Amino acid sequence: MDPYSKLQQLHNSMEKMTKTVESLENDMLETLKENTELKVENQLLREKLDKLTAKRGEPVAKIQSGLESLRQIYSSGYHICNMYYGSHRDPSSDCMFCLDILDNFGEKKKR
Image (cartoon, rainbow, N blue to C red; front, side):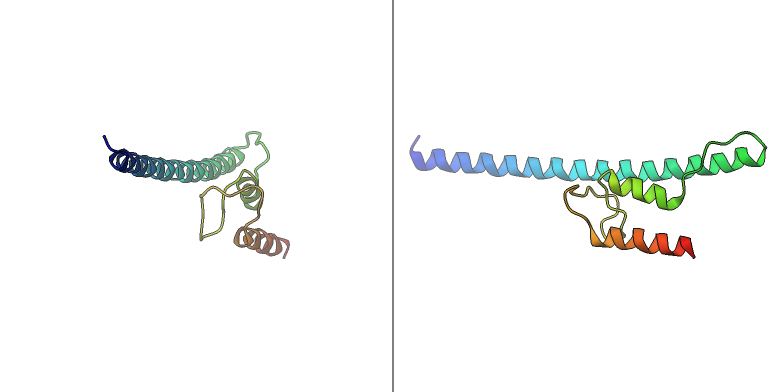
């Protein structure tokens, strides 16, 4: 096989590998989004359950406020803003949209 054919074959293999990696990245992002949505839903269901058990007079664990839940999700490395909600966030940099939500939510709660 001549060098040009070998190079072309290698190029085709790399393109196929790149497509596979992109597909895996997309699958992983979708899984992370779904995981975040399930965490939020789980937290909301726990809060509802705690409220129901409180009405019955049973002892209740401390209910986590919405702001604390958002802060926890954000600090665990996920976006809480409407632009990128549920997508993985680079922990070394902050998202101004997410921080704006946290700041505004905190101000409304104080009022």
